[in-house]
Length: 81
Image (cartoon, rainbow, N blue to C red; front, side, top):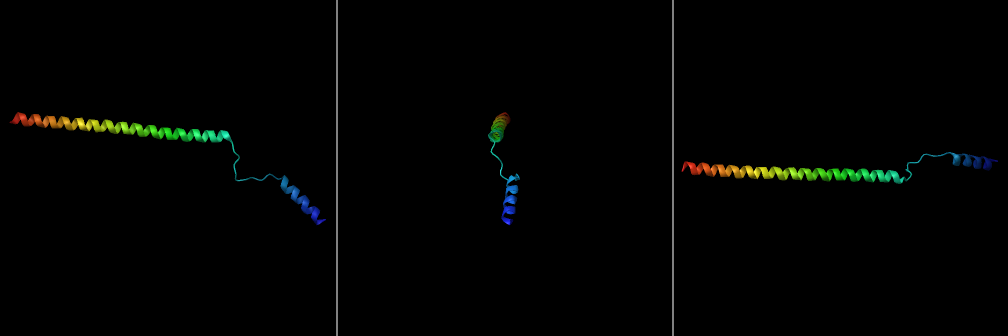
């Protein structure tokens, strides 16, 4: 009799759905995550390019300013001589 009770208890337990920590695979979720990650990487890449362009422009302006200052100082020296 005890064996039958144990079998019935086992059957009852097997019918109960248990929550698991493992997620079920869903290709849509994977696709969404991959697309989001690619978008983030592309955005970071674009920001780096923009920053590099701005730095190049800044360097060019500084070089032009130094050249202009040098030319101006040379002119002043010539005028005073």
